[in-house]
Length: 460
Ligand SMILES: Cc1cc2nc3c(=O)[nH]c(=O)nc-3n(C[C@H](O)[C@H](O)[C@H](O)COP(=O)(O)OP(=O)(O)OC[C@H]3O[C@@H](n4cnc5c(N)ncnc54)[C@H](O)[C@@H]3O)c2cc1C
Image 1 (cartoon, protein in one colour):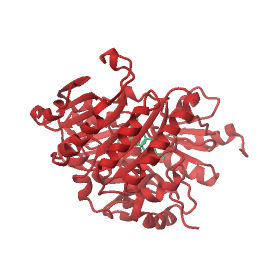
Image 2 (cartoon, rainbow, N blue to C red):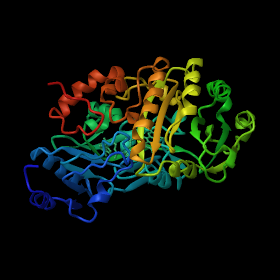
Image 3 (cartoon, helix red, strand yellow):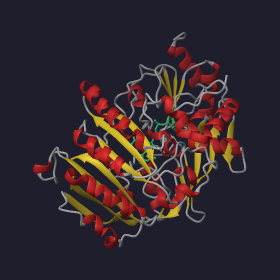
Image 4 (spheres, protein in one colour):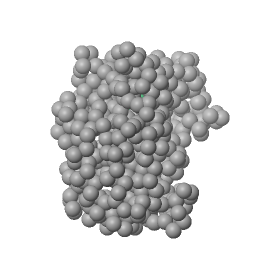
């Protein structure tokens, strides 16, 4: 640090409607803490922005003072890109306004809004837009990289539902990007957004959903995991787009309501959703595959479904992420999954398959910067654990599993699933769109001010 934090913070505070925090301030540690406990980073200054003008003033300040700039939305970056060591953190978490227009079926959202908050506001009108399945994830952080969830096979990714984004660019301009205004920037923001600016407002298209849908989990012992996955492969191939089901490989936690004899044992958890709350007969075949450890299927609100993973992935624990795309759930993929699941490490670890296709694949691959539209599955190893002493063993298990899956994978990866040590996979995350992204990055942010992300470096 070549300057005194209090002096520079005071200089900035004059321009800000929100709060400027220095390390000695009471709220500083809370404001820098993020969902992944593996990262304990300490910026020099945190600006808790109240509005887009605060964001612009902070971007200008970071650029002029040559500070490392990081941007926090919901704080759920697996790679810890939320916060830098040193420099200036733009904290958007106070910018929480949501405006739902039920008539035009749109929602306009500030960048501190979480997925749970957006679902709550839109579900009051029986509406929703696709997005992540954990309620504390930031809407903007998810949508600017993709944003997939239960509704995506029917209604696309979160970014496919974006109508416009208000952006503060690296040179401090406040622009609206849409199909008609700065279309190049709009293209780049939908997939590689964090590289191109700070989104201060996002407008989404909404769809009729719920409030009641069919939800459920059917959990089987993993002993015949290969048969279960083979059955699932056929079932999902013919499934309507209003149905989604993620097979989760987990270890049964030592808690109620799980019978004690299964505690600690690997299991296959079909987490499912159907847009029609009466579709119980449709999911029956998934309930008839043996003696389940747990079977809870029935109508429930879409909002409650969107919160059902919240307690399983608590904030502040240690997480390590590895992803692939698969063109098919081949016998070889199933063999690899059944080989590595029983040795699963980490008390919070889950490995899952997310079926894709439908509306995601109907969008032309070149229409947005998002990388992969045609894969049939996203495959995710989400290792989670508590003690730092277990880092090596858990991460080594995840790494070995991930490497074993390579021959079955497309080579691409969903950018929001990239881990902290995977910057070499960023080109693969964008596939054929990567070249255009470099050109646009060079045009919009030639000094790479926005680099605390899965970075696309400008050309020299
Ligand atoms: C528990 C958990 C569950 C998840 N579930 C899903 C899921 O179901 N589906 C899915 O698609 N993804 C899921 N994800 C991945 C998630 O979409 C990404 O990690 C996403 O980037 C998180 O956004 P955030 O705002 O919460 O995080 P942050 O760490 O705040 O932001 C992530 C990145 O986006 C940038 N960013 C955030 N806000 C803005 C903004 N307004 N303007 C510009 N850049 C910004 C940040 O600088 C950072 O680089 C999950 C992640 C976790 C940890």
